[in-house]
Structure formats: structure tokens, C-alpha cells
Image (cartoon, rainbow, N blue to C red):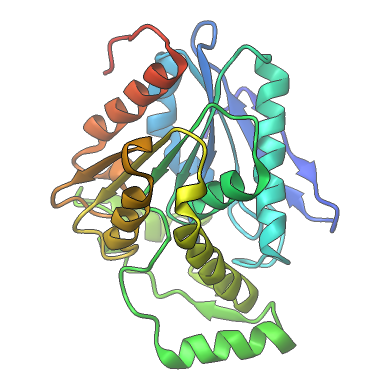
Length: 286
């Protein structure tokens, strides 16, 4: 990933979080803080980041703990709160760099959507709005009872214990080569710790049960052929908000809308939402 600034920091528990900023091609009209999904890393978003930069939007992102170039055991977090702390940190960096008059948005994908929604519900962040794609509110498959019981048990006695996610990388996108590139990427992995497994499930349930309390403009998008996270969870969340949520469902699309055949349409939806919420003039969306 080409970036303008490396914004890495050290957490209170001694881990290094790799973060970066890539500026708008001209003066920034808005800033977007990106939160990636489980097992991947922020560098996989380079193509869409370039589009936002060309449209006058600065992008800030980081690799979750235990992911990409950040430190920590792969797929492990000491607590769910630490994930919220890291998102708060990148928002703070964006606001500090861009100034108080620049609207800041958060885009969370998959597990990142889970984090973004819970952060908004629990922390009241200084942001203009939220974009969430294919959020982990419910999984698109049923974890085995053995894995679930094992994770709950190990969360108590050995929270760093690793469980294989068995991610179906061919379910990421209908575009040939996306799954293969994911498998070949040395910065991706297929593990989640018992602590992450259990706390993410609880956070997903919390977000669904408190959806009506969200007080930020929200764009929620999901492909209805997603086999990784459940489109039903997104439908339920959107229904709880009514017209306070802009909900868009893509027929036949897989998990990663930004890498699927609908990627240009999904990008235009996000750009339009940011412009509308910020009362910005429209620019030509590539």
C-alpha cells in the first residue's frame, strides 16, 4: 500500500499498531477512517482508496491487532474494548490532521463493520457518519457446536488459544483472482483467538439489540449472495433504524462489494452518501 504518512503507535499493553494516511489529491473535502475485516489487512483496499483520494477524500486506516503489519498474536485481541480504542485513535489522528471543519466518516467492512457500529453505539465518536459493508452481525454459516463450546471454554482458561476460521476465500468476490490473491497474500491469515471469537459474537448481538439507538447517519450495504456474513443481520439492523439508515442490497453480490463486480456502483454509493451528509458538491465518480 502506497501511503503518505505512517502513523504507527504503541498500545498500553505494548503492542504496535500499524496505521497510515493517504491524502486527497487536492485539498481534502472529507476524511474516511477505514476498518478492515478479520484475517485480512488494510493494504487490500488500495484500489478503492485511490478512488476516494481522487474524489478529494483523505483516507486513514490501520491494521487490527494481530493482523497485517500490526503486532500481536495472529487473530487475537486482549479485549473487545482495545479494538474500540484503536478505532478512536485513528479518528483522533484524522481530526487532528484535517482540522475540525473537515467531516470525518468511518467505513467498516465485515468484522470492521461490527467494530464501527459498536464504537458508534458505545463511544459517541466525533464523526459525521458511518459506512458499513457486509458487517458481522450474524455469520452467513453456523459455526460448529464444538468450535463454539471450545472457544467459550478456552476464553476463560486460555484466551489466546487459536481457532482456524476456515474462510472460504472463493466466497469473497465473483471477480476471478480475488480469492487466489487473498490466499497468496503473506499478510492474511486464517486464525481467530478464543477471546476474539467470543467477544465478537457478543458485540454482534449487542449491536443488533441496540440498533435503534444509533444516532449517526448510516449507509449499510450488503450482497445478498454473501456466504460469509449474513445479509439477514444487515436487514434487521436497517429495519430497526427505518429512514435513518440508507440501506442498499446488491443482488447476487458476494462478501467484498469493493472487490466484486459491483465495486464501481458500491463506491459511487459511498461517495454520494459522504457528499450528501456533508452537504458537499458532487464530483464525477469514476
